[in-house]
Image (spheres, rainbow, N blue to C red):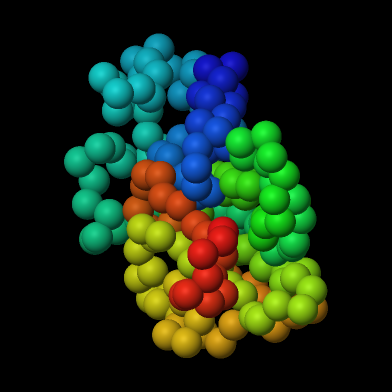
Amino acid sequence: MVLSKSLWALALSCLIGSTNCLTIPNIPTTNELTRRTNDDACGQNEPGNRECWYDNYDIDSNYEEETPEGELKEFTLHIQQGKWAGDGYPIDAMLINGQYPGPPIIANWGDTIKVTVVNDLQNENGTSIHWHGIRQLGSFDQDGVPGVTQCPIPPGASMTYVFKATQYGTSWYHRYDNPLSADF
């Protein structure tokens, strides 16, 4: 129960923030949680106790040298035009899955993240998703910067990004189309 409350709080903090969140906590899988909950010596994974990470990893683990094997986490993001009323006055906006900020992407350290981005924009140039703060070790072409690491995704098309969560922590993502564009 503690895990679901903390994930809910994390997702809620991403939704009420001003950016889209991509969060890679070091939370045990369901099987790990069940096993470790029954182990009284472990306690809970919290700021004062890092003993509950899975396998033999803890806060001092060097993510540059090794990353645990995780699961495949799949997500779909639709980039679309719509209305957004952040201050109560609706304006035209670019939305992700009909909302702004877009939905949080939550995965564990070591998971492979697979995100299919669908460009549902009408009469627009191509777009992409850029992953801020995600270490693209061995996957630099998945960074999402049009004209640098990829061509833009044309209207009506899609692209699937695949990368491994080699670091833990919270980052953010945003859509990219034109660097001179002032909207979101």
